[in-house]
Length: 160
Image 1 (cartoon, one colour):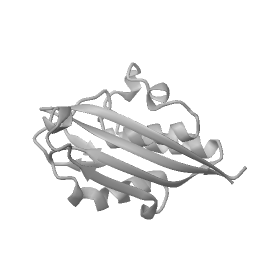
Image 2 (cartoon, rainbow, N blue to C red):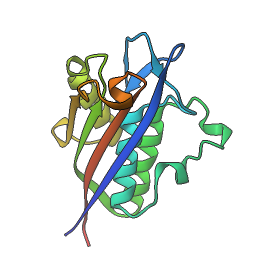
Image 3 (spheres, rainbow, N blue to C red):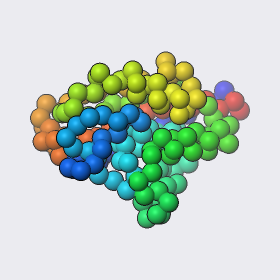
Image 4 (cartoon, rainbow, N blue to C red):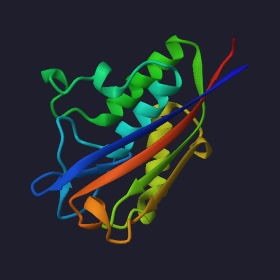
C-alpha cells in the first residue's frame, strides 16, 4: 500500500449579503463568505489537501474562478468531483482533518452535521472526517472578523 498526505489552506473575506457555508452546512450569521463559488472555505481547503496528496495540483487549477460555470457553485459539487478524480487514479480516503479559524459564529454546534455532510460527499464513514474549530484570540484578520480561514490535511491510500 502507498500512503500519501496532502495539506490545504484557504481564506475568504466575510461580507454582508452572502450566506455562510462551512463544510457544506449553511450557518446562520450576519455575514457570509465572498467568493466566485459559495466560498465554502473549509471544503476548498479540503479539496486542496486531497488534490495535493495525489499530486493533482490544486482547486484553482481544476475549477478556475475565471470559468463562468463555477460562478456560485455549491462547493460540495467540487468535492464530489475531486473524489471522482482521486478514484480514477486509484486513491481512497484514509482520513481527513479540518481546522476552521473563526471568531464568530460558534462552529462547534454544527460539527456533527458538517461531518455527516462531508462524509456523504466523500462516500466515507463520518469517523474518517475530523473537524475542529478555533479562534485566533482576536489577532489578525480572523480576529478582527474580516474573514475565515481553514486548514486541512488528508491521508490517501493507493493499492499499488
